[in-house]
Image 1 (cartoon, rainbow, N blue to C red):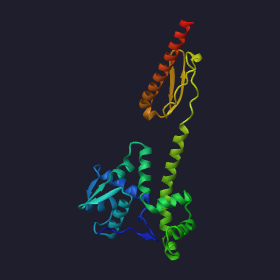
Image 2: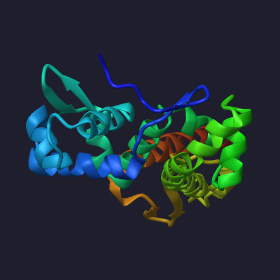
Image 3: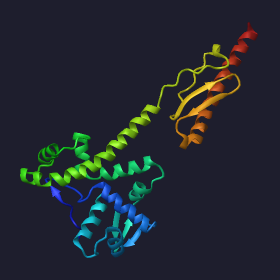
Image 4: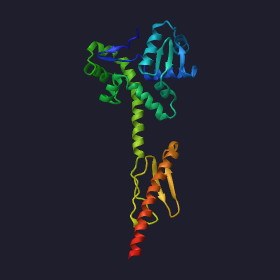
Length: 247
């Protein structure tokens, strides 16, 4: 029978913060890059507790509540989400994985939706009472630990929100680009996300890329767009030439 999480009103919650959980998972990967250990080894070398200690069971259950690890047949294994959270290729990958883990916890998800980054003891207590259906005594008793969990979580949620804002700021409207034959009235299609600007000279264009990590892919897409634009220019020029011949 699995260990139940603490509960306040209708909400269950882990006994540790997301930062504490990530710390254990990082230590897990450091000790065993494959992300698989016996429960006894995990308890001793990652958690620092006896395998038979009640604290061991509670910690394993709490880390698992974030879906960073799972227990199976006497073994502790890191999940795909856990791998991405501590060893994602980019910072964006890691932050998004942590946020995904946080949003598995109803209490964290609902509080963030209702109160955002404001984490205050009085606000938390009222939230537990009014939204969580906890009575006054229960809400007051659980407020300190829930506040600690929420403060840790909100840092990551704010971090992801700021990343999203920065990504949106990169998407800028590209002005009409001067061409070799402006009289043809060609307007370039909207360029792929990540391209800041293209300046076209008589013989070549200079492309400025914001996202260096994906520059090759962006360049490929940009050249596809430029190719389509060139086809439009050539088609328009051919029509103009035919009209001139008929004239």
